[in-house]
Image 1 (cartoon, rainbow over the protein chains, first blue to last red):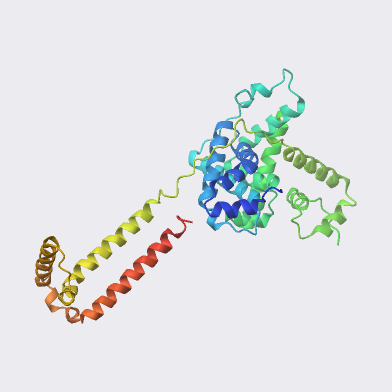
Image 2: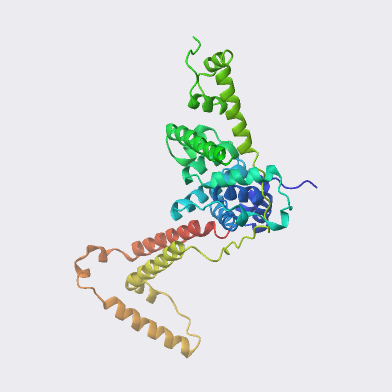
Length: 178
Length: 173
């Protein structure tokens, strides 16, 4: 027996099937969590916002267009939610590699790749929220400029300039760490 | 005509994003400019580096506590309550008109209790039928035939039921 598609699960969830929605959460939980983690750079908050994302998605499920993919949609919901969360808080969480490191997964000698990943996460977390959001939507969710403009309801020119400045700032921060 | 000046950072960004409208022009310049090719390569490496960020596993699966369908939103509860209040008010206001039809109905007098109840009911309707608001006597609508009132009541009831059905449909799916 083949596993039900996301579409099947959404249709069942729309009819009130909580188990079907639970299956969607299992399938997309990690990717949604990673969206939140990239933007927030704090595991606890990322998990809370990932949970909140799915609750929002469940509430708005009746507005979901079945012709679209569920994964990209719910990840965009997550990105917007994290952005709003940062905007409401209006403080940037300083990067703390020790705090975010998971001791159970940390070998005694960290690999260079892992160190670099932490540096990128730290540099991303130090960007202003609206810069983090465009980096997330462009580089990790692979949205086009037009799609980002539509998603954020901002002019195309703002998308270009925000993305350009965000990358420049991110590159400067990473170079400073080299 | 190929570009003679070096490409701007913005042009390189748009080129790598596949969002430029002058792709052929930029490629013509890149084919003959090592400096711009070097900058493009560095930018591409930067893109690759940030996109190579590994996914992190959840320490524990996400557990949702989805509210039960019986827990209606506050606005819906309020709307339903208002509808009920409106319907009750309509029935009370229409009761005097209905009373004119009640005597025509043969009430089976099965027990004294029922007779007593009927008697009390008529007394209450008589009181209601004589009740007048200060401005009501001047309203011509009071002279509307009973049949018309019954029709209006029926329509109001149907609208109320359909309205409730539409409001609650999603909750009971």
